[in-house]
Length: 171
Ligand code: ATP
Ligand code: MG
Image (cartoon, rainbow, N blue to C red; front, side):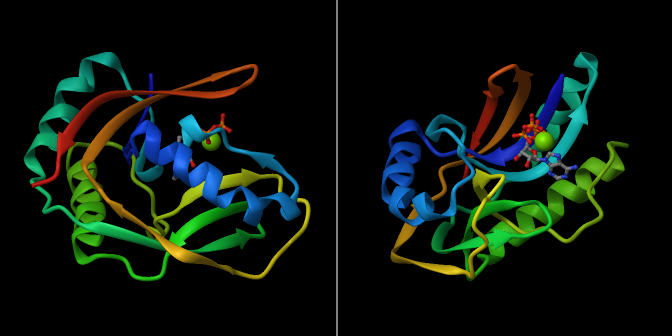
C-alpha cells in the first residue's frame, strides 16, 4: 500500500478552508483539490509492504510532539509543479522538529526518505492555468493541529482517495 505521514484536518476544517479560499483560487484556473483531500504531507513513504505497518505505528507513537498552531497566511504558486498551495510564513519549531524526527526515524528504519528540504504546504490546485505571485490570505487561517496521522493513498480513475489509518494526538 501507498502510505504517508501527514497532518490531517477534520472535515469541518477542510470544508471551511475550501470555502474561504475559493475566491482566491477561482481566477487561477486549474483543478481544485476536493475539500475532503486537503492535508499537509510530512513524509511520503510510497509503496510499503503490509508487514512493515508495525514499525510505522511504533515510530509514530515514539514521537511525542508538543501541540502547535499553524497560521496559514498566503497562497503560493509553484511553477515547476504547476500547483498552488497554502503556506505558513512561520514554521513552528515543533513542526520542524516533527518533520526532522520523522525523516530520521524513517531513515534509520530503512525507508526511503525525501532529500529535498521540508516545505510544509497544503496543495489546493493542480494544473494552474494562470500563474500568480504570492497571494496574502487575510484573515489568516489559524489551525491548532490536533494530531499526527498515517494515511493510505489510492489512485482511482477520478483522483486520489485517502484513508487515515492511525492518528496520534499531539501532546
Ligand atoms: P496523484 O499522485 O495520484 O496525483 P497525490 O499526489 O495526491 O495523487 P500521492 O502521490 O499518493 O497522492 O501522494 C500523497 C501525498 O504525498 C501528497 O500530499 C503528495 O503531494 C505527497 N507526495 C507524493 N510523492 C511525493 C514525493 N516523492 N515526495 C514528497 N511528497 C510526495
Ligand atoms: Mg502524487
